[in-house]
Length: 254
Ligand code: PTJ
Image 1 (spheres, rainbow, N blue to C red):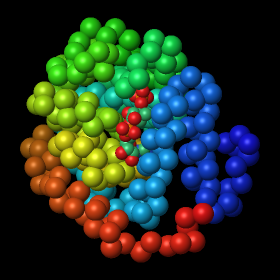
Image 2 (cartoon, rainbow, N blue to C red):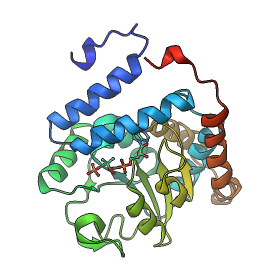
Image 3 (cartoon, rainbow, N blue to C red):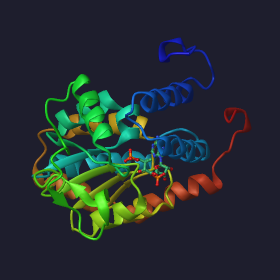
């Protein structure tokens, strides 16, 4: 079944399309096989959150848009899952906030780096960083810390969706403003972030773009105030409360 053949009236349509994109990503050498496992983990949390954008996540997405618009050198980090799930949406976000796109992989291979960069270009990206690999995030062994010096290396604000906890902590320790998208509010990545977005990357990325369009032209002081007002601990608490106390509906979890 291809993406276009998934019946739109299927009760699990969005989930089936998402799975199909990840599968195709693996087939095309974009997504790692571990990416399939990561997606399954994410889906479980999304069920528990009610497969919707919580109000607290929307506030995080607005704060993320403000931080990106107010940044000097913002970078959106793209891994194999992000490239498979939201290639067009991540390019649109980069355009909306004038950010660079950088391919940055947990399981780095030259083949996947190139395949993802090509995939992003096919979806409208003009410049894709990551292939130079002349910078390092301190404290990470082997290729896990490799970045572009003029990309994530010098960035002041970095978006890292679906990031490994170790890498997210090391990046936060560099003092950059880190924005994480992760459906698990208990993950180390979400806890390391200045702005944790507990939402599905499929919903989160377009919503950050929408907020960026609304906030375009705002003064730096107004953008800074939105970021300052955002409380990461309160956002994580709200997501955890939604999971613990929310209405878990058996029928939606087929
Ligand atoms: O492409 P690579 O080599 O960079 O590898 C990417 C993965 C995602 C495989 C790698 O970073 C990894 O193993 O990540 P983890 O440690 O499994 O963490 C992924 C986190 O993202 C988990 O907490 C999941 O709940 C969450 N997650 C999975 N799918 C989504 C998600 N969060 C938001 N939206 C999703 N669709």
